[in-house]
Length: 402
Image (cartoon, rainbow, N blue to C red; front, side, top):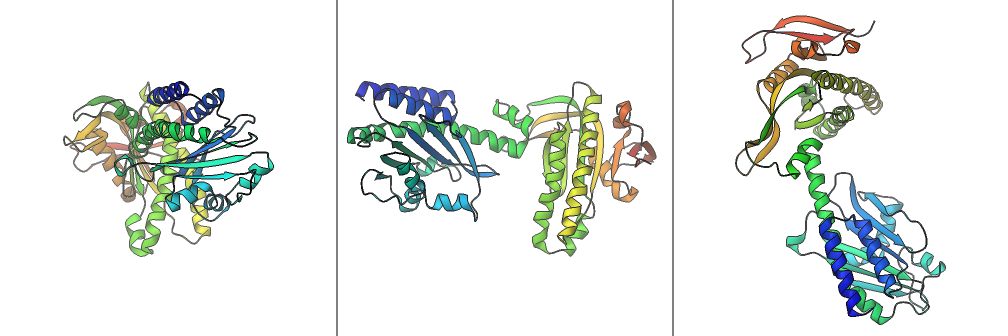
């Protein structure tokens, strides 16, 4: 490969990284261009750590002959085959030793001392090289501090020294392009995890100025755990966080499955909204989420009882009203949420669940819009005063089916 080809591949990597080409496509495009210009790469794997609540790292693969799983996501390390394989890998060796490169000539007497090397030798591969490209402290986010990659060939004499030199020249560009795309994805993940899908999309599309908000009509969901204060005072403190996580997962999964957006988690409380083209759609979605939650709670409580762990229920308030949806806060510390009288009212509604011994309470405005197919068991429980609200309001619940 001559200098002109190196320049062309470098330019392609920079442009593709700027355009946001997926990491697996970057690796494939890089390998294919190298092969087309005489560098005998036949298989490659690249690995980056991730900043994600579910998985720890991602791997990208390319093979010149065989279909491969192009993207894999690996959970957080724990005992098991995957963790053992990582500890035996050339990448782990590079990580722990601080080395930048390691090579094994598979047709010679080099040891097959890393994971997969013996398999590669048996499959006819003749050479293996792995490299690590580390980021500086200011270029690191979370554990995303290095780009690992390895390349193999079946060429009779393995990689020539000129081939290795070209890889050394080009791989920093591949690392930078992949890092660019990965960090962009991390920004989206963080925003979604902490703000919710819709709010994250708005923020990532530039809606980050204080005071930017929309006036919308929405079905409001406010839920909290029954008897949580008593439970937290009586159980082992180490049980509290797992318990909150179990019930929060049930609530959040139900809301999201029904098309809602979770905006806030406040201890054991959850604030969510449902938007629809028509108010009836929003209310219907909220009730669907409530039905999904009931099913999840049955399974969750049954499992927790088997494990001898404390169980509880979820109080739920539902309301329909106009709210301001957008950025609230100071100039440099914002919260993307909903505010307005309707938000205060739904929080007051759910606070009455315990006193009225009801798992579900809904406002008159919500009940009036509930689709006909969902009102068979609708029941008024009379007028009630909501703290901080001038007028007593009629509240409704759903009676259990006979």
